[in-house]
Amino acid sequence: MPARAPGAGRLRLGARGLVPVSAGIATVSYWMFMSPYSQLLGPFPYRFSTTEPVVALTFDDGPNEPYTSQIADILGASGVRATFFAVGACVARHPETARRLASDGHVLGSHGYSHRLDRCVGREVLRDEVRRAEAAFSRHLGLRPVLFRPPWLLRTPGLFGVAHEESLQLVSGEFAHVLEVLQPSPERIARRAVAKARPGSVLIFHDGVEAKGGDRSATVAAVELVVAELAARGYGFTTVDRLLGVAPYR
Image (cartoon, rainbow, N blue to C red; front, side):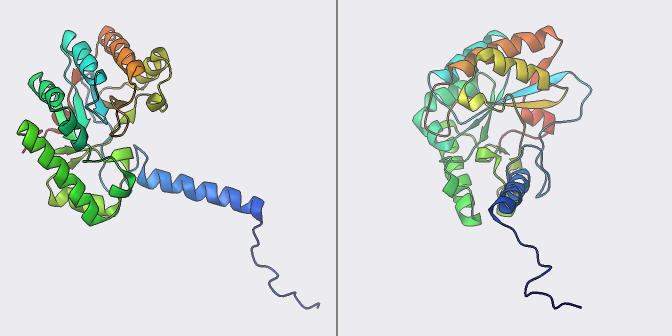
């Protein structure tokens, strides 16, 4: 029987073999830590069980003017209440807009303070982000939100511990359109959002770009189309706290 060469029988991966392995690892990592739907690390509700035809419209990364106010105008004209996951630094930048949202009956949730990736990892850093955001809400609005949506929907084991310690309710949702942040046409955004709507859906739009502002005009126009079309189909609109059955503020 011939001798086996050293290393014979071992799995050898060349550059081509590493590509699918790396892609697989990236896919699994995204699903665990950033997918709107994954529950592997802990409860992260993205849709709610109800027979009532209601959806929750949510907006991330604001306030961002003039777009947040334009969205508020559209919602107000239709009597729609929404949930705005606001960035603490943006609340400090546009406190009058944040106050208008609250006075119009919209619910404000926290989206952290800075919307920086390096501030989303590590338990102590996360705790500081959460508390700085809460301080901004408290100082400018007199509110302490219960709802929290992490930037980029990024979850780590530490986030769930911080949320428990700070009495926060984590919230996910479904992206109205996966490319909405890049501002495709309003019609494309609206068509996809309406197709995703189900009783109890939580739809994610963006009225800002991280914490940097940015053009959201396509989102503004899409929201008007979505509200009109869903209303025509018999849907009503609600806020995330009502779907959860929790108080929105402490």
